[in-house]
Image 1 (cartoon, rainbow, N blue to C red):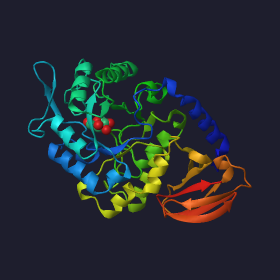
Image 2: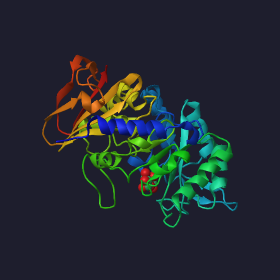
Image 3: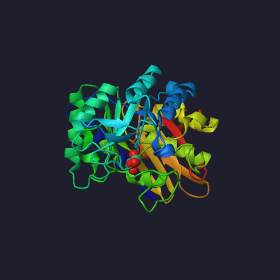
Image 4: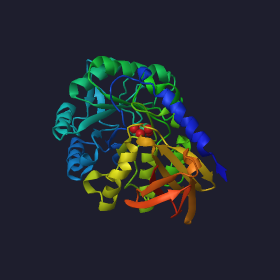
Length: 393
Ligand code: GLA
């Protein structure tokens, strides 16, 4: 059994503290906790329209997602069709007949924030016009439309320098004068965690997620556990205003089982990940809604320290992930990647606590206090599931 124990947790935590010195960070005041919202791509791909976005904004309010903290409604690729004679980006007139400004106004009227998508190359991944050579023009257009969030992709940009390209758009957004959360999407290909803190608020750390528990697609799509493996080790780089992004949520999509949906959401909260729902909010079932709006899980994701969990135990398919919360508390996820139920133990030393410590445990998944425990905690975790607890000394 491989136990990284307190050493790894403490090392990464102190490094995170060092790296979280705000002076060097992007100074747009946004993303102090991981952004929460919805994005069209995972469920709808190119099938976007103003009707979908309006109905989604309505559903975000009526479903309780807004009350739970979700704010951004983001249109991904395929809203744009061409540039006009002056080079100004043009939205698809059939799908967005009222125009993007009016759509942003509608989203704002619901007390929500509005996001859009572009690409650092000349074309987006779906072959629509990208921002290459139009960075300032696009930033000014977005600011005039009332855009609050920009996801900036990396297709057709192979010959560009990522730091240079993302810095250019970052500066263009800043100079346009409207606070716009900047979401970098170069899939981790040039290790953005090493350079993007001063450039954007969040950066994709992996290729695209697919609605699967375990498995990799030939084109590079990743299941939930593949993404977890890719995030292990990146915890020193996350902090208020600058987070690793393990991609948008697939909760409620594909064939994820109820336990897998819960585990996926719990692990994204442990990772201090942006929580960008990717399902159809207009028709989600009560189980999906309950997962996405679980206030105790959301409180872990939104903990003001912004510390991403470390994998502190890896014992075959049994894992323990832990993160520090305000007040010296810990959130702990016992993760079972196996096909059968497993007994998983976390020792206090794995959490950077002394073994003799007596601490209060709360089962976050069950919303139940478990009383006081000394030295360790063991639970039987169902297959492809997480038992999520908080530990308070
Ligand atoms: C890339 C991104 C996805 C999505 C699509 C849109 O694959 O990683 O999240 O934005 O492009 O074409």
